[in-house]
Length: 162
Image 1 (tube, rainbow, N blue to C red):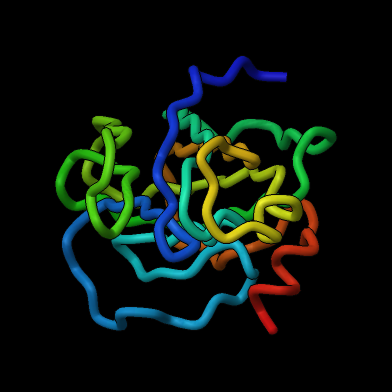
Image 2: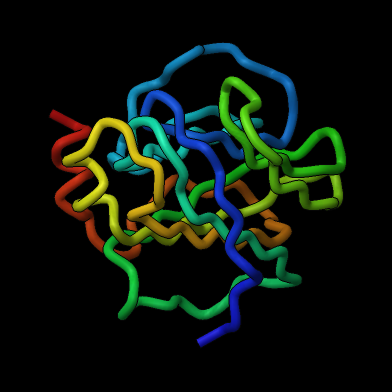
């Protein structure tokens, strides 16, 4: 197993937080195909089980696609992110709390989002302590690829997609 960077708490608001690679927004809320993410080329909304409250998030920039980690995660999804501003920002819509910032090359990246604890967190509306953890890996990509579920889906995805 790869060692993840330290976790930081990102405040989920309205059941989500953002991974942003640029400012462009065409559709404010595209349908989710996986129950874990939605978004467009330059942004990804990660759909948390936590409606309002902290989520433990760690993010790691890699040089190449890593092997898949499976056993400790309830769901893993991979999708593209086009970075146009030289930085990936992980934050929420309301800019509450300290974001995670990752300096990257402006280009296409592949993002792999690992989650656990959404099944428990989705049963609560407001949380003061995190019940779920997310580990985000990103690396430079060549050709665009479609979004894919690598592990799961979890029960929270089924609830979100209802």
